Amino acid sequence: MASGPRPVPVSHMAAMSLLLRAAAALGTRKGLFRAAGGGRVSLLGRNVVSSGLIAPVRHGSHGKRMFVIRPTEFYDKRFLRLLRFYILLTGIPVAIFITYVNIFIGEAELAEIPEGYIPEHWEYYKHPITRWILRYFYDSPEKEYEKMLAIIDIESKKTDLRLKEMAVRRLMKERGDGPWYFYDTPDKNLIDNSAKITPDR
Image (tube, rainbow, N blue to C red; front, side):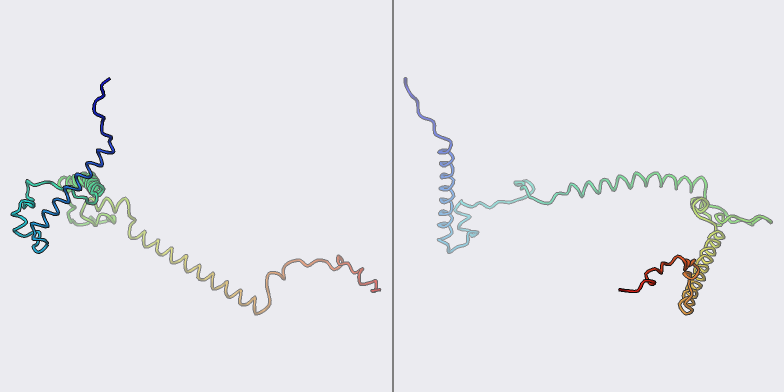
């Protein structure tokens, strides 16, 4: 049975490829070294360029595109995209509503107050949105004033109570008086004096 040529192992092929690349790189370095005049001339000089081993390359718009590793911008772009989306999601309806109010309702006009009529606190503002907010979300100045007076009255009463408590504690310390004198004391007949009747032996 005739046998053909034996196949070359993969490891031998890889070693041969590596050897060929090393030889090519060494030959290029030797050629560059000779073209540069044995190290006396710069590798970027005219002699090396004219030798054909190094060709000037112009990296313009039609040149080779390089793969540059840089930080990702995915999260920054996603954040800006979501920010723009939610701003427009709320901003467009608000802008439409404000435009509608300004066009079809308009600001209030200054007029004389009828006799016997007491205006509400929100009627002193001219813009309808401001008037609505003050009408349903804020208390009147009179109510705010009464609330402040109530807070001041509560704090003044607390101060009086603290002063009285301090005076009571001071007098109790000076006179030796206190609530413990008001407790019932035990009856003296309940005391066992039998241990004192029998003398010590």
